[in-house]
Image (cartoon, rainbow, N blue to C red; front, side, top):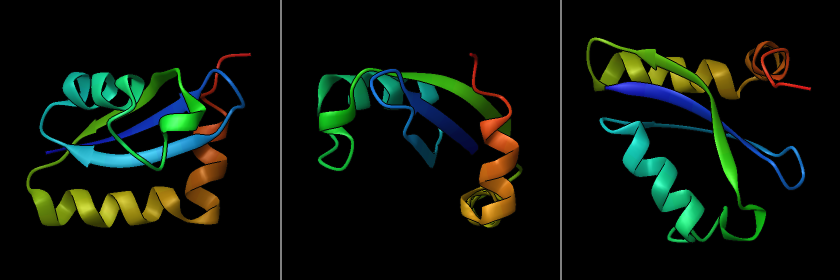
Length: 79
């Protein structure tokens, strides 16, 4: 399982999720399949982390969605 972070090229919105196939999820986000991100397309991947299992990935996802986790990810956004 992988935890990933996407950034919207349109408005800088940060999306954090988990998936087995990050490339497929990126395609789904950029194709408009996800209602929550449809209006913020296009996205690019800025972070991917491999996790041992879904439970570990979910814990890491929650951390990255926290204030300190988001600050860490914002430093990775290309300027």
